[in-house]
Each structure stands twice: as C-alpha cells, then as structure tokens.
Image (cartoon, rainbow, N blue to C red; front, side, top):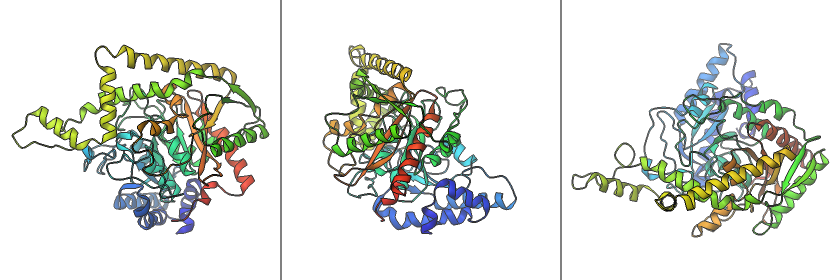
Amino acid sequence: MTDIIKLTAAETAARIASGELTAVQVTEAHLARIEAVDEKVHAFLHVDREGALAQARAVDEKRARGEKLGPLAGVPLALKDIFTTEGVPTTVGSKILEGWVPPYDATVTKRLKAADVVILGKTNMDEFAMGSSTENSAYGPTGNPWDLTKIPGGSGGGSSAALASFQAPLAIGTDTGGSIRQPAAVTGTVGVKPTYGAVSRYGMVAFSSSLDQGGPCARTVLDAALLHEVIAGHDPLDSTSIDEPVPAVVEAALGGSVEGMRVGVVKQFRGEGYQAGVIQRFDESVALLKELGAEIVELDCPSFDLALSAYYLIAPSECSSNLARFDGLRYGLRVGDDGTHSAEEVTSLTREAGFGPEVKRRIMLGTYALSSGYYDAYYGSAQKVRTLIKQDFDKAFEQVDVIVSPTTPTTAFAIGERADDPMAMYLADLCTIPTNLAGNAAMSLPCGLAPEDNLPVGLQIIAPVMKDDRLYKVGAAVEAAFVEKWGHPLIEEAPSL
C-alpha cells in the first residue's frame, strides 16, 4: 500500500492500464491513507468512499472489456470544495452552505469523471477562497504535512496538503490571487494557474469572477500537465471561456528544456519582507537556469508594486456582488425563518451566522469601494492600475519567453501567527497577484528547502496568455535538474505522518 501511494499519477495510470494494478486497489490504498493520517492533517472536508470505489470499479470493468483508457484513468484525485459535485456536499468552506448537496456537476467535475479520474472527496479551503492559510475555513484549519503547526497555504491548503501527505497523487485548486501557487510553494508540490479562461468556471462557486481560475495540482510537472489537458478547453456554458485549442502541455512537459530561452527576472520581486532563505534558493534556481542554457534578462515592472493594493479593491468589489446571492431564501443556511421576521431580517440573520470574519470584511470593503461617490476613486482607479500591470507584462514578454520569481516571500508560517493581522496575511500573495490581474499563466514548483527552517521554497514561472506550454517546458527542465542534483524529488523529504 505504501508503494502505491508514492507512485506518480503517470506511473499509477500506466500500471492500471497494463493490469499490474487495479483501479480499486489504488483507490483503496489512498482511502486507507486518508483514514490513517487525515485526522492530523485535515485536508478533506468530505470523503466520498462509496462514490470513489464505484468509479474505480467502472475503470476496471472498462479495462476488462478491452476498452481504451485515458491517460489518467483510475488515478485518484482530491477536489477543492468549491466545485459543485452532483450528490456530494459542496460547502466552499462556509457554514452558509453547510450540508448543501448540488444537483449538478461543475464542468471541471464532469471532465474529470469523463476521463475516469477517481474523485476521492472534497478538500478544505479558506471560506469562499478568501485567505492565504486555510485558517478561514469554517471547519477548522489544515496542517502542513512538513510541519503540522504550519499553514499549508491558502485558499487551497486542503488540496496541497492532500498531495504532500500522499493522500492523493492529484488535486484541483482555484487561483484568484495565488491560491494554487502559494499552497504549492509552501508544501513542496506543483501548482499551475492556467491562462484566465482556459479552464471553465461553470459550477465553480464565484469569489471574484474576473480573477478566479481553476487549475491542476500535483507532485510532478508531468502529472500536472496530464491533469491540465483533462480539465482545460472551451466551454459554451462559461462566457469567459477561451475558444482556442489547449496548448500542448504534456508534450512540453515530456520535452523539458530551456536551451536558448530568454528568462526574465523582475527587480520588484525581491527586497524588504523576503526571507533570506527564499531569496537564496531563488538565486540558485536562476543560476541553474543559466547553467541549463537560458539567457537571464533583468526586468523593471514598476506597476507590480501597486498590484496588491489594486487586487484588494477589485477582488472584494466583485465578491460583494457575487455573494449577494447568499440571502437565506433560496438555498443553504436559513436563520430566523420562524414567522416573526421579515425577509430582510432573515437575510441579515443568515449572513451574520453563515459568513466568517474574513468574508464579512471583504464584502464590506467591496461594497464601500463600489458605493456612490467612491467607485471612481477606488474600484475605477484599481482597474486602471490593472491595465498598467498588463502593459508591464506585455512589454516584458517582448524581451523574454518566461519570467521567474519566488512564489512567496516566505516559507510556511505558523498557524495563528497572522490571524489577527490581515495585511501581513495579504502579503503572502505579493508575487502571485500580478499574474491574476493580467490573466497570464503561471506555475509554482519546488526549488529546495530554506536553510533557516528546512521548509519548502517555490519557484514561480510566468508565461504569456495561452502560452501555458512554456510553463511545463521550463518547469520540467528545472525539475529534472533538481532530481539529477539531489537524486529524488523534494517531496520525498517531507516527514512521514
């Protein structure tokens, strides 16, 4: 069983296809692992044991009939609890949707099922994806498998922790300001934010519609690429979906190379607030890229310094609009409906009981920014800054093929350390937010451990819009170089639970 859970997704699929393993065996091994360790980690909010085994049996029956299996058939996956899943609870980490069972599947969920990926269950997350630590979940925090007293990142900390603790070889996250990449960085895993619009948002509970993007999470670059190809592609049910072919990301991952590529280093992605060990590992990664044949180009993107401020006006403004639908009248939690309260009072009581402090903070901030007399000064100005950030990226990509940076300024911090300091928490997304504002593609992959605390450091790779394949080409080359230097993937160093 231990050997099974340590396999990559690609290895697992190959062994199922050859008959060396059955999908049921693989699923049972991961369910046993969840049962053994998740009480400590708290990566999952709901484990769909019967559903997962039924999906696994269907894969084995297909193989027995000689049907062709997809590249990830029978491979287990942990799904962030922000995607609707028919017949399975979807809470978005919030009390306001506690016990809600959707009557339909999100497009991402449908595509996973169509590819015969086995969905183990739904993972913990910051409520409505608002947070950088998974401490804002209404159902309690998740621990980082490298050190259970540390955060696993957020908002998708449940998905990253499931990977790092070998409870699943694949996971799905969402990235509004870094919520795939930041958890990947602090848990020593791989996380990809595809180009905005490349993966359907239909059935993904909305936080900030112009920023939210689902994407793949895995322990290797190739596994992430295989999952990317399963979930990406045009969806007529999503008006923001891009009607273009999916870039050949698997092919890029299989042919990783940076020979002759121009790699940009942005001067704004370092300085005050960056941990010394993070900068050390990043500088080593840049040196490694040069060693592998890349040309390093220094870049100046002055508008990036304004990204955090712009993001925390745009995202709360869109959240205040999107979360207006949670009124206690149509679905989810309802408080005060005893015949003595008006509809407005029921809505107010429901929101008071159902939303946590961070969600309330962002709704109030966003409502203020959108209010009469303040719209142009705040929201309008933030959108102008967003345009400047996109222009900085456009100028940068005239000079380079990809940009690299640290994924996060620090390694994983202690649970509770920043709970009472929202600004300190927001700074965790300093390096990731510009990409969301511009809509580019980006990846985080492990680049070593910080010498101060022996915790993982992430290297961020950023590519132009719809050039997602460049992430995998560069990522695979860096990953292979690390494996050659140190003999094994960094994730193997994570302490056993």
